[in-house]
Image (tube, rainbow, N blue to C red; front, top):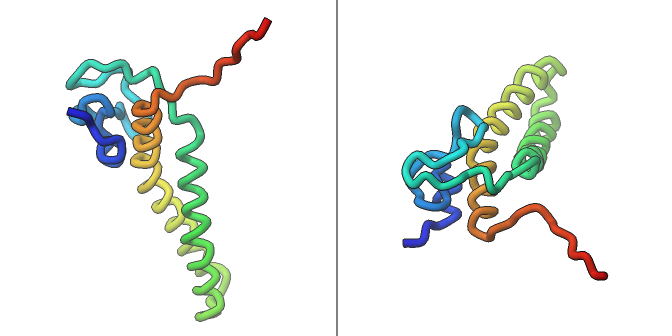
Length: 120
């Protein structure tokens, strides 16, 4: 039975079996799946998840802050009290599932390091 990369990724489960967790801690990947013993070191999501989460934060939080400023004209300290914690919470909430999703997509498509061919 094939495991959906989307389902396994968003649930932070093994992209091979869909059962075992891929994380050992908050963002550190395990080396092997607990359920199927698959080697989880063959793929690496790198910095992609952080970029996508920060970009999503930019898309949702900055317009919200601008609307809040123009609609209510609060003092500056109100922005300091509201937006940094909201941004941090938003990013922390999304980072783990996005990292797992990109890992599962790499696993499904067998993505790896670029290799150059020698044409001599």
